[in-house]
Image 1 (cartoon, rainbow, N blue to C red):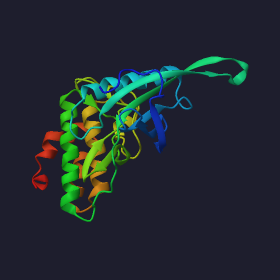
Image 2: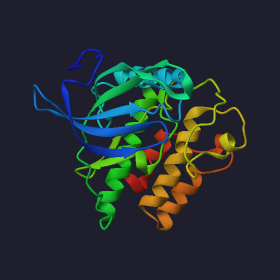
Image 3: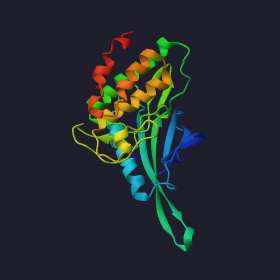
Image 4: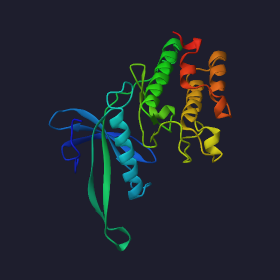
Length: 243
């Protein structure tokens, strides 16, 4: 990584806010010494406890380190935390402020007027998820907000809910964003993680391309019974994707 674990952001100049979510805020910064533009993700101490912040921080570092050099995945450049003092509620406490330094993705709109380009974009997303699964990682919050567009290619971001797994063990935590969440998760069942990703990808397909062929494929991916859903390899091999 370019930067070792840091105890401050003093070497960076704030430019602007890029966005915010439930677990984090993302800002644009410039590294003063190298003039490099980066995105810095700061975990939210408003919505997460200190232990949840630490768990999310450790999870994302572990996953992004495993995905270092993986195409179409945002790259981790550095990370760290600094302490601040909170004097609210008539008591003093020390708060750790965790942050991740990520490559900056120059987001552009996807050319949805071209079915060929949109299909290529989605096919590359399928391939990216296949590679991630081969490395023993599931994202667990697949939705179009977490798929950025750069030069009509997908860049997968935000692994805060991710999991390192062999894919064979069931898990029980509720993660994801409706309506992308598979029904077995909503029903509170323990679930195999890979079929839930296929379901989410089916929803994304319908959002990107909505015609008879895409609907047929998406409905297969979104079957209620997870054991009847095709696996990623089967979806990738579908003749409709052979460009």
